[in-house]
Length: 257
Image 1: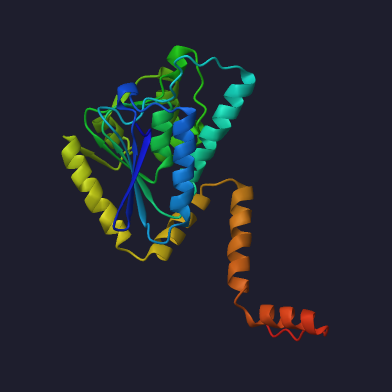
Image 2: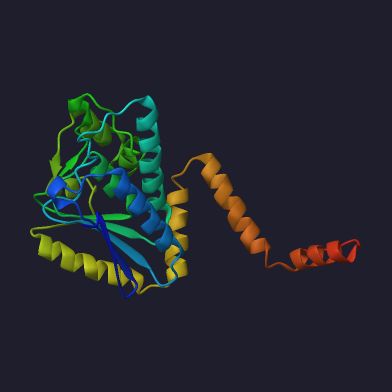
């Protein structure tokens, strides 16, 4: 059985974590397949929105640690791959939506935080139980969660290790919409995806980039400004003149155009 299912309907890509018997927990293979799928989606001109969901009764219950012995070296390697995946999901050109149909805890909760939007059913449980287990969350929650719900509430969720339901998550703006049933959530998720996918894809991508980069660190902001400046300058008359003068071995005549 495939651990991850990828489907495309119209302009919308659907990614399903397909390990229902293990609550869709992450394995190294699932992370690898997920990363490859996201890389394909990021370059696809005919995909304008991404929906992520879990098969069965859970969204994702974190990392599958059964039979795995971790040490400082292999845990570091695993966490780098896991964080690279979450960063890739957050930074793809297309907006994304998590459909939280059941437990979204630990790494599964951090996956939901990395998507642009989150829908949930009222009974779903989500949060960071790591502190209760003597663990430390290491998938970007300390950055993404305060950004969504504020520093104090985020720290409360992390340090109490309590799980909150979908209704409470909606009340603190952690999820965008909440529903009574999975069927209702899936239906509205499709409508929401189609609504955004019907907008101009480049404009949607640029707006998404602008919002996220305003929350990024100075190096990321500076890099994005350089990219934008270079992209605009590429079409200037001065750029054309400069390149032409270089190849013609003459002094360029710049006009500020």
